[in-house]
Length: 511
Image (cartoon, rainbow, N blue to C red; front, side, top):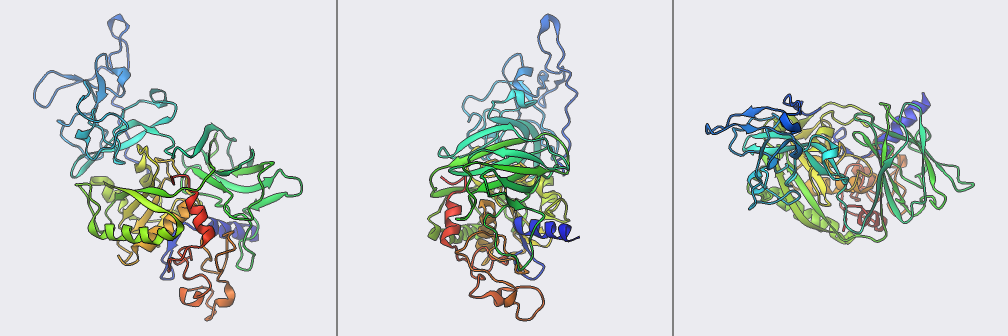
C-alpha cells in the first residue's frame, strides 16, 4: 500500500505541471478520416488510376481525379481546392492539379489556405504537402493528421508531411533510434554519456503512457539514482535529480542535468521504462552546449475569453499578458521574440474549449492529448500554448516536466491555459508558470510540503509552516519561504532564481 501511495505522490510531484484549483490556487481521438475507398489499382499500360474516383466540379466543369498524395497523380500534384464547399470536421477532399506558382510552397508560413500553392495551410500556420504514409515524406518528417481552416466556422483534416523535430540550429538532434520494447514489466534502455546538456524523449505506441520507473547509474558506486516507487512524502529531502516520471500522451522525457547535484553521466545510465500498452519505442536525444537567449510563442485560440484573431493580430487583452510575460522573463536573460496566433474554429473549438475528466497516469483530461496534436505541421522552434475556456480543477496544465521540446504535433506538445478562470491580471503568471514546467522546472514546494525540485537556491515551504494544521500550505503560510517564486505550487509570485533561469535558458527550443 505504501508503495502504491508513494508512486502516486511521486508522479503528482514529478508531473507537477498542473495548476490546480482545489485550494483556490495553482493548480479523443479526432474524427475518423475517410480513406475515400481509393484502390490505387492499375489502369491500362500499368499507370496508376489514383484510386479511380472522379469528382464533378462545382462549376459543372470536367471531373477531377481525387488523390491522397502526389504519386496518385499522373499530372500535377495532389492539392486542395478552395472552390469546394466547406464541411466542418470532414476529411478534406484532394484533387490532382497544378500548384499555384504564385503562392507559398510547403514549409512556408501561412495565415490562410489560399496563401499556399496547394491550398493547404495547417492550423499551426505552415503550408503542407499531403501524404498517404511516412514513406511519402522526407526522413525528417512524419505523415500525420493536420487541420486546415476552410471557412470562418469549419476545419477539415488531411494527412500531411510534418516535421518530426523543429529545433534551433544550435541544438544537436540524434535519432529517432530504436528504443526498448515497452510493457508492464520495466525494461532498460542504456544511455551513453549525456554531456553536455541533454533531453531524451521516448515515444511508445499510441496511448501507451510510458513511465520511467527507475534510473541506475553505470558509474561504480552510484547505483540507483531515481526510483519512482520510493519516497514522495512531505518530510523526505529534496532529490538531487528531479525526474518527471511521466508526461501526457505516448511520450516520456528525461532532462540531464536539471540541477547542480545531478549525478554524473560519464559512464551513462540504465533507464528502466514500462508502459500501459506494450510495443516498440523510439528514442530522440537533443543536446546543446550553450545557453540560449530568446524563443517564440505559438498561441492557439480555442474558445478562451471568446478570443479570435482572423487577421493574425493577438487579441488586445492577451497581448497585454504577453507583454507582462516578457517583463517576467526578462531578468532570466530570456526574450520572447515572435508571437504567432492561430484560430481553432467550428467543431474542434466546441470539442476542446471545455476540458473535463481525468485519465491516464497523471490524470489529464482525456481530450488534452488530442488538443496538443493540433501543433502538427509547425516547423519552427516554439512553445505551443492553447487557450481553452476551462480545464476541470486546473488553471493550467503543461504536458510534462519537461515537455518534448522542439517536437510539435505529439500528444504532449504544449501547454493549456483555462483562460476563462484566470483573471487578466494573473494571466501572465499562469502562462509563465506552465511554460516553466514545460521547460523543466518543478514546483518549489507542493501543497502538502513535498519537494521534488533539485535546485538548492529556491526556498522550500515545509509542513512546519502549516499554521492552521489543515495539511495544506497556502501562499499566506509560505511568505518568505517560496510563495513569491513563479514555480510555487499556487503560482502566486513572479520571482525566478538564478538556477531556475539557467534551466530555462537551456530549453531546447530556445535560440
